[in-house]
Image (cartoon, rainbow, N blue to C red; front, side, top):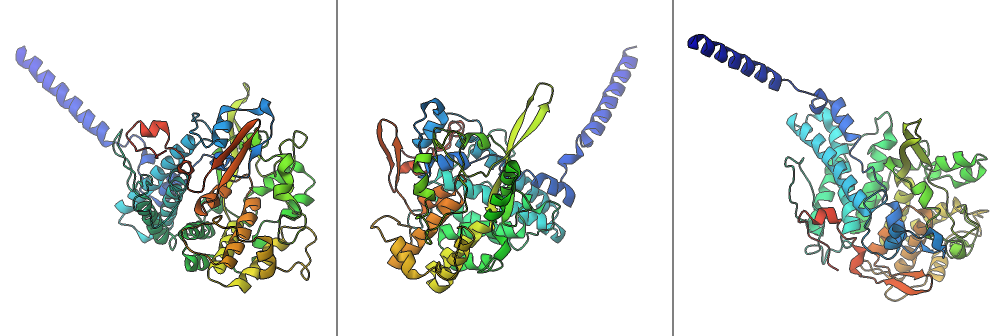
Length: 494
C-alpha cells in the first residue's frame, strides 16, 4: 500500500511538473512579444509624453501677469507664478510631466530592445528612427525644464537628468543624474542616428516622428547648442519662402464657426502642424481663467499695433470670457472621453502641437542671422510678418536692418547666450525672440528663450512687492519632483 501511495504521489508530482512546464512555456499575452514591425509600431504609439507642460512653462514666463481677480487664486497657479516647487502632482504639473516623459522613454527603449533582438533588421529602420527621436525628445524636454540652461563652459558640472538607454528590469532602481554635457551628447547621438531612418509613411503621420517633425525637433536642439549650419541643413526642405507651409491665421478669422476655428489650430490637416499629441489636460479651461494669466490690462504690451516691426495690427485674435480681465488667443479645444456616460464621468484631453513649421522657420531665420546672412534673414522676416499682420504692404512694410536696429536697440547685459553676438545680431535675435513670444503665446516656448538667453523675469503681484527671477537664478531649473528625490535622485541646488 505504501508503495502504491508513493507511486501515485510521484505520478501526481510528475503530472503537475509537466503541466507546470507546459503552462510556463506558454506566453500569457502575445502582445508583450515585440516580434513584428506592427507590434513594435504599436508600442511606439506610447513613446510620446501624454502630459501638458505648457501651463507651468507659460506661467513661469513674462507672458503672464496678475489679473487681480482673487477669486481665481489657486495654490498651483500661485506656486508656478512664484517659481516655487508645485505641491500638486496632477495634470499640468512638473511632476506629472516628469513621469509622462519617463513613461514615454520606457516605451521607446522597449521598442529599441526588440529591434536589437532582431539584429537591427533594416526593415525595422522606420521604427528604430522613431524610437530614437522619441527618446531624444523626452530627454531634451526634461533637461530643458529640470536643469540649468545649456552652456558648454559649465555643462560638464551642471546637473542634468538621468538618461535612460535600456528598459527597466528592476522594480525599484536608483538612478543618478548625468551631467548636462552628457545628456546633450546622448540627445545629439539619438537625433543623428534616428534622423536618416524616420519616414512619413504612417496612417496618421502627424502623431508620429515623421520626417518633417524630426527636422523641426533637430532644429530646436541645434538652436540651443548654437550649431547654425545644422539648423540650416535640417530646414533646407522648408526653404526661405515656405508659402502654404506656415500657419494660416487669416483662415481662423474667416471661420464663422467659433468652435471649429479653435479646433483648426491643432488639427492634423494644418500644414504647419508636424507633431501632435493628445494629452490628459484641462488647459483649455484653465489657461483662459487662471488669476495669473495674460491679462486685458497688459494686452497692448504684447499685441499692440506698435509691438511688431511693421507697426500694424496682428492677425492673432485675443478673446476673453470675463470682460477683458484675462485674455487668451484661442488654441486649445478639449475632447472629453466618457468612461461612464450615464454618470457623466470621463477624462479630458487636449490636442497639443509639439512641433511646427512656424518654429522651424523662425529657427532658420535665427541661423541666418548668426551666420551673418542678414539679407536672407530680412527676406524671411518680411515673409513671416506678411502672414501675421493685417494690411501688409510689400512696398512700405519691407524689413530692413535699419528698422530692426531702431525697433530693438541693444540693452547692456539683457540678451546673454553662451556664444557672442554683435550688436546688430543682438537686435535681430531680440526681434525674433519677441516674434516667437507672440507666435507661441500660451504654449510655453517663451520659457525656452528666457533660459537660453538668460533673460530676467519680473512678476508683479497685487498688493505685494515685485517677484524677480534673475538672469542666472537657480530656480530656472525646476526642482526635481519629491517622489523622485525620495528614491535618492539628487535635488537641484537652491
